[in-house]
Amino acid sequence: MTSQPSTPTTPSQPASDFNHIQHVVAVLSGKGGVGKSIVSSLLAVTLQRRGYRTGILDADITGPSIPRMLLPDGARLTEDPRGIPPAVTRTGVKVMSINLLLRSEHEAVIWRGPLIGRAIQQFWTDVVWGDLDYLIVDLPPGTSDASLTVMQFLPLSGAVLVTAPQALAGMVVRKAAQMAEMLQVPLLGLIENMSYFTCPDSGQPHAVFGPGHAEELARALRVPILARLPIVPELAELSDNGRLEDYPATEFVPIADQIVASATKPRLPPFDVNLHGV
Ligand code: ADP
Image (tube, rainbow, N blue to C red):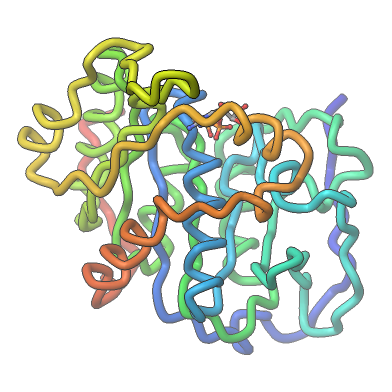
């Protein structure tokens, strides 16, 4: 079923007038299923734990997964006369996702590109984010309209690329990186997720999906490797049950620190680019 989400209020002044957001960081992947939403969520949780006021804008309008990962009680939105209030996780991360505006998380959103783009712009202009140090934007996989809207209209400080060891994932993430470069979004680094699994009996790491191509990819894209993350079976369970904040995520501390160090000046939108008829 196609859904038209309802906004709780009709504000007379854009909510963005009340927002002060220092840095907007997009998380991109080429292919779906490489762990981009988990990385977005754990990055946001880690930044919040390190004292930065953090939010997540779920720009994956047709495949939103952030509320399911971080809001175990399927949080409902409260009223705010200034605009749409975000949901807030247990540790204080602010979240906005199309799923929070639907009657049920199972309702499908079947929209064409322009409507998706408008929803993303509204998440920027009509959501009462308040004061944030970091807003993490979880993009859908690939180089779709949604990614284009985010890169053209949001004042991004940079983008983080997420890939997996499979060559296919590496090949497609290059396309996403190319799009970011065309729109002058600084690439902050590459994360290879699901790089290896540590056998609980022997303590030996195993490259379950093969040796990976992170180094070659990072060299080609001229970006640093921010981390190689292991396969952690517990993560799948925690993310399925909205309990991702129970995960210690110590491996995300150096990632968060590198992002804080490199996400300096936001570039100012809107950005236009000759997309060669794409
Ligand atoms: P994407 O946003 O790229 O589509 P998700 O973040 O939704 O991917 O992750 C896809 C699935 O893989 C989820 O079920 C998630 O729990 C699981 N997953 C992702 N990264 C890991 C990991 N490092 N270890 C175990 N499971 C993972």
